[in-house]
Length: 244
Image (cartoon, rainbow, N blue to C red; front, side, top):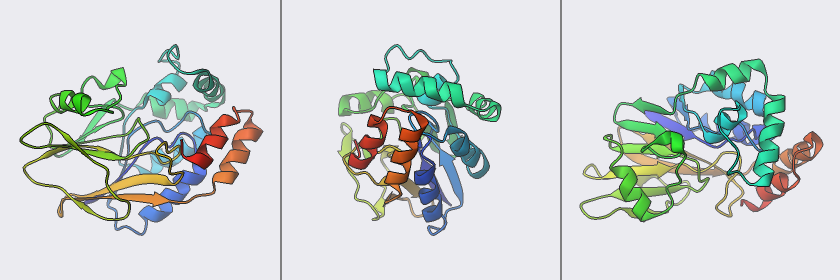
C-alpha cells in the first residue's frame, strides 16, 4: 500500500489542489492529513471540505483547535493571533463540526499519526532537536510516526545508538531499514518554512519500505492576493513567496 501524508495546509486551497493533482500521478492508495487544515490562509472551509472528502484519516492540529476556540492563543505571535481570530469569524458550521470530530492520534498498522509529536500530542511540542527526538521515540511503540507542525520536512532515525537526522532529497525514494525506527516530518502543503516555497508532502510505500518527499510549485501569487483581499495580515502572503 502507498499512503500520501499531507500536513499544515493552513487554508491554502491552491497549494492543496496542486498536491492532490500530483497525488493522482503517484499510485497512491490512501491520503492522510496530519492536521492544521486551517489557520493563516484565506480558504479554511474549502480546504476542510476537501480533506473531509479525500482523506481516509485525519488528526487535529493546534491551529484547528485554536480555530474552534479550544486552545488559548496566549503564546501565538501577534500575526498568528490575528489570523486565528479571522478564521474563527469565518468558519462554517460544517467545518467546525468536522474539526471537532478529529482525534489527536490515529494509527495505521505499525504507523502512528500525530500533528506535533507522539508523546503528549495535545501539548503541541516541536521535535526540532536530536535530544527531543530521543524523548519522543520513547513515547510511542509503533515503528514509524508521521508528524507535521514545524513545516520543515526531515526524517529522524533511531538505530542502536542515539537518534540521527536525515534531510531527505525531494522526488527520490528513501529506503527505510527494518531494524530502525523513524519519526518523519512531512513538511507543509500550504506554508513551507524551510526556505523552499514549494508545497511539500510525503508518500510511504508499506511494501517497499520507501519514503518519497514531493515538492511542487503552485500559484503562490493567487493565494497572496486572496490573503490581501480577505484582510489578513499581508506578511502571511509575503512569507509564502520566501518559504519562511
